[in-house]
Image (cartoon, rainbow, N blue to C red; front, side, top):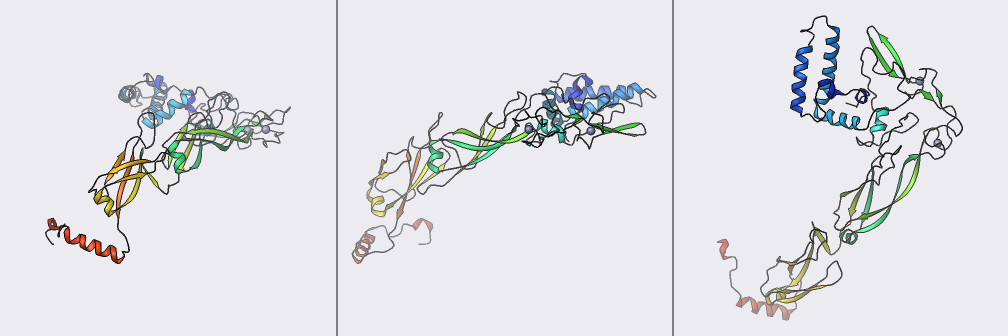
Length: 377
Ligand SMILES: [Zn+2]
Ligand SMILES: [Zn+2]
């Protein structure tokens, strides 16, 4: 359900006689009590009670529902709906109490930053109150080594900004919008059907109540232009492939003194030919020969921070054994990862006659059945 204009005007908490911090249980209890008292069956012919009953039901419909209540609270937090164009006498929510749903058109603009969408912006947007800027999303392709060390880069973004020529009004400088002739500046048209009065947005001015006769040529009357921005971002060390980094306040500029939205950067990390990543640890696979594994050796391996390190591989090291080099993984304020070196015994694909003879003579001295425990040798 889209937020409704009523939400700006009605304090559903006071309708139910609870505080805005009431628990769901307290709200339900208050609603049941009022609903019992005010129910039309209990008050035959009492129009005032019936009206109250409707109000209480409408209030509970919103604040009795966890999701709607959260949206309602957000809407209320933003203050009253300003919109001079909408507030004509006898406008929305007039007698008959029909609820008008904006279908997200204008409230979508106002709430765009809150509920995800960028929101449409245009001459219909007459809000004077502070509006939070839209959240923006950008992607960045980083090399493995940049992601390891952290880096600073500049992102080039295009986002909405108030047109500087008309200061966002949409009217050519020196001209002003005129009240809409079809709705008389109210922005809505009433359609009386028996006892109910339905309001719908005026098609001529799209609900703004006024029309721009001399549109600004730079923004074609929308009041909004796209502007290129360069945003410097600092990506911390150890960013993982696909990670979404939130840069608070680096999104689109807010309106009328509202805060800027956030910028989300999705980082794609290219794989490295030598190193792998496992969380904050770096991984490295190093081939060693059978004789190195059997006799032991000193193994010099590269690291990502420049200095190579030498590992002592003891005699009798099995293939697949992992050696840990402390503190040579991804650095962070909390803890630094390690470099995990896995040795893989490599087997020569071809042998010279001499090597073959040496190995055959070695084989005669080795245990004849290393697989005895399988019981099938
Ligand atoms: Zn303009
Ligand atoms: Zn109109």
